[in-house]
Image 1 (tube, rainbow, N blue to C red):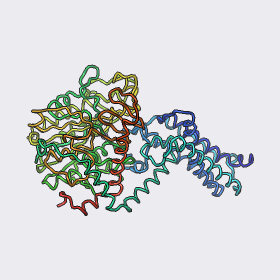
Image 2 (image 1 turned 90 degrees about the horizontal axis):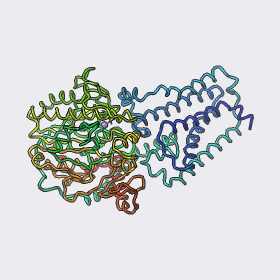
Image 3 (image 1 turned 45 degrees about the vertical axis):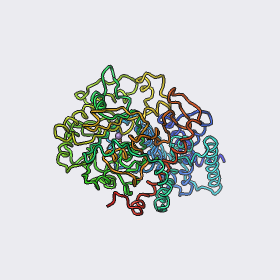
Length: 626
Ligand code: GP9
Ligand code: MN
């Protein structure tokens, strides 16, 4: 025994060290909530089974390659760990395979990566260098003796025992852990980051198979569910914007808490505050995005389907059959275009936009972007709108257009000359810098609307502005609590902070009779709402949202992580909160909706993973496909 340990000390050193390193990274780079010592124990042991597995292959190799393999794997595992650390800093989430392989995105992260990099990160790789040195220079330390059969057996038994112990503990702590997949944090906490990636890979191939195996019969239940939930459109508003141009703006990272609010006594969104007074403004409107962020919001708005629980649907299912708003409107004589000053392949948009039915995508190459007119992620919003309008003027009418802003994107960079409100003062640089960039976007929107008026494109349009997703993640809860004047940000507050503005502006209509509408709603509701305003019937369309103006529109929204909000309650992580008090309440109040929330997400996922709409069009021939 002792002899074997000595013989394999390099293998053991690498395994134990990477194990400890992973645990240290868990504790220092991720925000994993631990509620008991059992959970801590699970977290501690969870990297081990994977490491034993990976390094174990070395026991079946020739002496020389054995040591090289150990060094190579140490490097590989460290890189994996590091990619996750970076990703977590940015998205406050663990990476999934589809996202990891979106390498075209990684290149574009440019500035953000720089912003996220810390010099101490280099320490993570120090051990790999040491291992390489040991192998090269200290042949006395690394062994070159053949491995015995018995040693292999003992190793494999240890591996199996560790894996079973881990799974057993995790299953006891969290029943049904592996079947309830949308909570990544829970999974990583219990089976570890590495095993999670394997689990994710299995899921990935399962979803691939799902499309292959899907058939049209699956649609029957889904269609029944959708039809049963449909609400009749509001008669007064149906067709009120018929044949008008449609102008949609995705407002980057804009959350509702800044609306009608101040920083250092100054209004953060003076233009929007004013615009709201001439519009329909929805103040209980939630984003429902997942890992795909901006792109998920686009997906929701135009398909009224949920984005996916893992990966970005723009990547994983870009060539599916959809019935998106642009495609529908093309059948009503609309020209459709989308404007975004970024690489056309970023988030796979060039492919996805074709599936959504866009005639034209004005992307990076169509804009004049230089040092002076860009900051952070690229072209500043003011110039973006200015240059877009020049194109907009030339489009055939009526047009359906979508504009994706960028300046208010993490890390919220902005030159001194563009700052119209001061930074906030708190321990979060991110939150501090958020306010000036929001203010900048607000000003850009003002100029945009002004030029629409100047160009004669305003009066005959319907303008929809929406916040795409949160800008301030949970990592900044302390600063956020300070800003909002709260003791702390509870899970209840967190859900409430997922509200983003939705503004529907119809010149000649909403300016005469503006409204603040407080129905609980979400991005999924935009598609049927817009189509009805344009006087287009949606009886044959498969969507999960409801017309926001329907008399009996349900006060209900499901967030992508499975939380949901009703008129009186908020549900998150198996806890029910009373909206009036913000405090925990009896779960039975939320129970009637738990199944519905899960059902909707499941049905929507089935449509996307199975690419089911390809059957719908073929079979029923909706009124859109002529
Ligand atoms: C970049 C824009 C922003 O093209 O989509 O992406 P986000 O990080 O917000 O999803
Ligand atoms: Mn975004």
